[in-house]
Length: 496
Image (cartoon, rainbow, N blue to C red):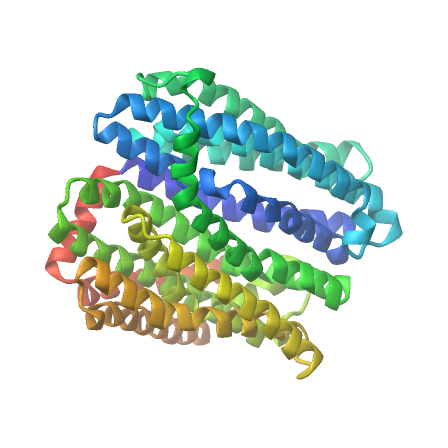
């Protein structure tokens, strides 16, 4: 329960700081200037494809080895991952330096912002390197099921970002990078904390270059290379989309899209928080070969994530433009279609985040990676076609994402999960249908509430959203979940 509570708190603080920070920065520097922050973050994150083979699976490998009692292997895994990531960090420093001094050749920047963007790029690159090095030390949190610690530390980073912004924007001339100086300082402190604590969580693990084993590296790469390919596809769905918008559209329109992108980002963060609560139990049931319980867990996790994100997405469809108008202090109701296109397909798509964890547990990473890479390629090609040939403008980005993602969600994942787990495909599609019904119900409830109580200010908007959530979530839980699935949800709540 503690992990779930802190996870929700982490999500809440993350959402609040994201929306507040965007509004705060734009109040000082304008919407166009803010667009550079989103593009730089996207560019820096592209380098993750080089290390995600290790960062994405390190906790899984170390945790499984510890659960199996193979402490020597766990130590070897830890050191092999740590020294590999340390070496990669040196490479990132070189790549980051070259990219930073040539930033004007990489993206469109107004001359007065070049120096600020260069400092921002350096800070975000440094943060990436710190987070990479932190990865093996944080695996003990996962093994001990102390996810609440990482949730609380995440909150510290968000608060540091807010604090540095409040302090520096008041004291000095506004700069794009103030918020990320604070988060970098916090991340360095968190790395030190993990280094001090990891031995108490992983008592058999210690740092030693002698424990480095290239065969272990090859074993991780055998699985992780597909994770890297998967990450490449994922980046083509997110970061490349933002980068292309910088090249194709005016900066102020990119700033608007980046602002509205906080809606799907919030849905994804909620999904990630929920998946984190399910993941330790997924790995434990798989390691103990408790397949019947694992099948129940898959369906209950899918429905939980699907229905919760459906209610959130439905609320965004109904109230999203009201929120944007109040938030950015501009009349933005004309962008209702854009907001709808950005979130309408997400609940069904994000069910697949549960399926991804199942595939990782089974060691099945090849075809998920290939299909995700294909999805990313389709997305990029669709954006180019829809903008240059059909001239759909900024609407081309969310439409392309939908076109690219849905075939993988509706065809590949059900077939693969059904084959591995022996769950009938009709049950998987039934879970997706429950999610769509939940979103339709949330939209209907939202429209009725909005007609009765017009969200003309923040208090009324928050009240409307709360009423919709209170009405929809209990009804969906009562009618949409079987008794076994409700029991599994309670088990997960107790384990967290």
